[in-house]
Length: 186
Image (cartoon, rainbow, N blue to C red):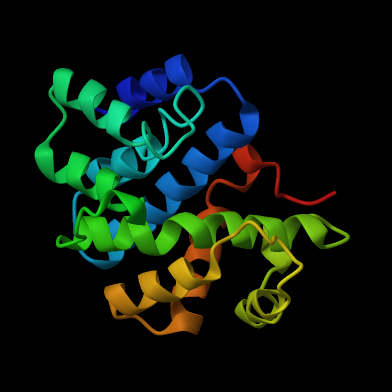
């Protein structure tokens, strides 16, 4: 299990560019947090990369992330990683007990939200996004309406981090993959 093998698996199941970009964003945020928490960066990045790899094929709550979990189990991916992936979807009822699981849950929705904030800036640059602009957009219920704000709040609480600091960390992580996400600016 390494990052390139995980990326091949992602591409095998996920054909749309937007879902692949989401996977890269979450992976970058997980890698960033692994550094902060002194954890295995590749392991955490792979967890982020694969958290939604089955979503395009199985987009409903009866199948995602259950089918992906079965696929990963058959490929020999570790239980801790699979439990974190199961726990990122609240409706599974899988408790987020490990630091890995709590972090994945905390960065998943927020990564997408921060990207949305960057994309509405005239420059479309992640390098111009600040926590205060993310917090301001967070209050606007019409902005990125599909993003579950309650899950973002819950993730921050479960991880036990300061909201502004968490947003800044996710922004910093996304800067590291700005080229791949198309967020370097115009």
